[in-house]
Amino acid sequence: MQIPTGTLDDIRDGTRAALEQLTPAADAGAVAGGDAGDVALLIRAFDQLMDVMERVDADSRFEGDTRTSPSAAAGDITELGEYALKLHENLVTLANDAAARENNARLALEFAVWIARHGGQIDTLEPVVDATALLANRLTEPHELETLSAVISDICKAVSPVIREDLERINPGRPWRLLLLNRSIIATRSHNPALMEEAFEVLTRHLPEDAARFFTEGMQQMDALDYPAHVRKIMEKYHRQWTLDRSLH
Image 1 (spheres, helix red, strand yellow):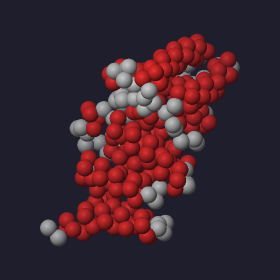
Image 2: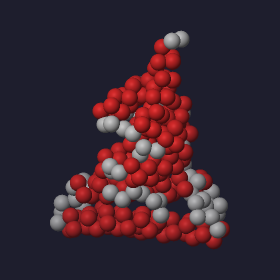
Image 3: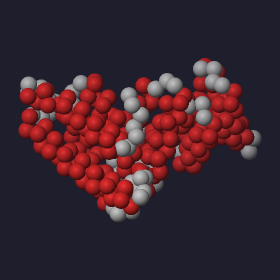
Image 4: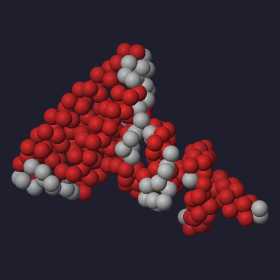
């Protein structure tokens, strides 16, 4: 799987590929939960979405800013992003094979990165978290995981305040918790101390109740997978802070 860039070219390519996978199945009557009419409507909706996103990007280029869009209010970007993720949900509902699911997972991340880098907020997090886990499981090289970790950092900063308030702490499967834990795991697998420090600081600030167990299990992984010394050093630092040092007080 390609690591998402959040560029409109990659979003358009991913959308086209996903819709092309649906079209033959729709013609054959094999689309899950829908028919050819549903696919046709979805194609038109995505075409319109791409047109609007293109205008937003054009405004950004005109203003000389390639990361954010001064011409589009953050609320407009948030609303557009929410609509994109809703269309993505419809796409996932119609997809019915492994290849389509993998492409759709990357597409969810592409939309999330686009929203984040245009100053919007991410209000629908579950498909983004699922896609993050799927992509991380496909990557093995530290430099790839380093790039993915940076992408997730951007996404975390764009998650809406309502989600980040994390009021449903009784639910261990809540997307915000899973995103922060996955981010820390990916940062560790990247072997990059700076990314580990950044991810761990966010984890301990937002999920202090998970910290001790996370770092204890992290130390077990240091031994089981023979992590480099500079990675072990960071994990040991946080393990001591959240287990050994606290047990003395």
